[in-house]
Amino acid sequence: MTAKQTLHIHLVSDSTGETVHQVARACVAQFPNVTTVEHVWTLVRSEAHLDAVCAGLDRNPGVLLMSIVNDDMRDMIANACQSRGIPAVSILDPVVNLLGRVLGQATQNLPGGQRRLNTAYFDRVAAVDFAVSHDDGMNMGQLDRA
Image (cartoon, rainbow, N blue to C red; front, side):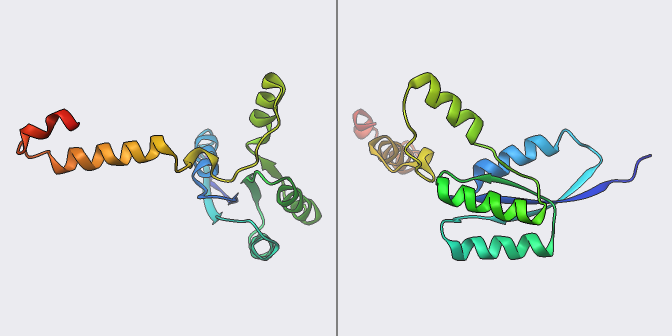
């Protein structure tokens, strides 16, 4: 039986980190003899945050996966990794670049763009609130407001 390898994996995001975390888990699952130690860095949007990430890389070298939409920040992280010999990948780039080419559009580079607080979001919140307020079967006269 092969001994499990341990891999330090740095997950860097300019938002909640959910995207990079899910991609990392899906990929690592393909390697059953690997145990990961995850180092999660969220809301990385400044050089001060980058300094903290770099200190973490120095303490626990491994690999870095990032979901950073700001070009300058992504380049700074990639350069920091390269100077340390840390393999790094921007998980969004291949898909965003493909979509940009197909659509003939430039990206907006909005961190957390999939979680916008727009009308559809607030409509969903109102629907859940209505359902919770009326889940006891009382006030059937207000059913037309659903």
